[in-house]
Image (cartoon, rainbow, N blue to C red):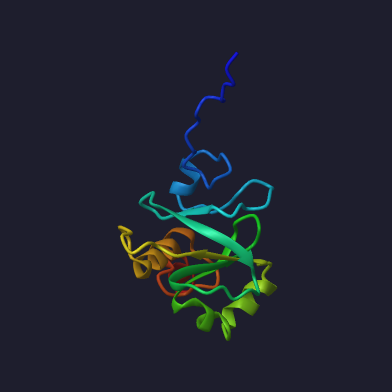
Length: 148
């Protein structure tokens, strides 16, 4: 009797938690009522997915050419930014305190490979346009629409 493995099940295009693929493609970074895993995914309006590692909000991980977000464990993103040097950018970040006061407790970090099809400068812009985080003003069509 051979030891059989379960059949291969390809990963979903959701945010790693089995969500239907349409929700992230529309820009929703919301997850079910569980903690976001280390491989948390956010999607832009074109359906391109970006994997984010989850860290405690007040940590200062070392990363170069990174896109980061302040959010909660459910994936509700308050702010998205980019940094050439993440550690130095986070040390005096004014939006981190604002995000914390709005309920953020997690720092999400995406570091694209050097062969990524979308450079990190463009990833930040695309995710802001898709998710409309309340603490972002640049590239946020919702802010410009409702503040005019």
